[in-house]
Amino acid sequence: MNSSPIRPWWLRKRIILPLVLLVSSAVAGLVAFVNSDTSAIVIYNETGNPLPPLLIRACDQTRTFSAIADTESVRMTLKPDGSESAIHLELATDPTWKWDGEIIRPHGGHRVIIRLFPEGQVEAFDQISWWRR
Image (cartoon, one colour):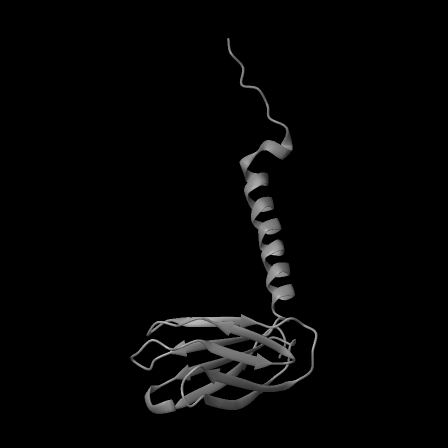
């Protein structure tokens, strides 16, 4: 007669699956909380044309993006050092197109979303991570 071997308690599905679910939920929550303090600027090109190189300056940080195709977006994630400042955008056109707008902090979970429309129109709004509210 073959008797079924008894598994140790840590190998039983009734124990392993809930334990894995609990640990993975805790890890996911921890990662989300740690990442909720970073701030970002997201720019959407809705002009109908590709954009020339774009310069973004905020919180003593600068980043340049090469040509951005229509309906595409770019993201600048801010490092936590630096001071609060306005967002400055420049397009490499003749004459240079400039825009100064929303205030952003380099930490605290701020996200500023900027949409660029035809004829230089700009729409901007900001959000704060619900972890940080």
